[in-house]
Image (tube, rainbow, N blue to C red):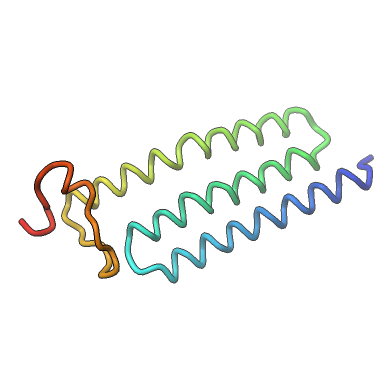
Length: 118
């Protein structure tokens, strides 16, 4: 039987995860270009999903479920930044232009060229 502390802790972590996931969804809808949208989705989405899985691990009374939830958190934290980086790099190399508020292209200044103007 779950004690009150486990239920409250699981509920609080679940609500925090849902809040981060909501912020990621709002960021994807409201931000101006692909790069900032990817940033919102990868950072807040991974944290939100991870917190939801932690809540599952806290509330479940099965060690196998908790272990799978923790492995899922590790998988999210390892794969989300890599996939966001690869998507951003592919869009940059295909000359996708960032939003008008972007002032500095650091990748172009490191290479000595600007693929957006070529």
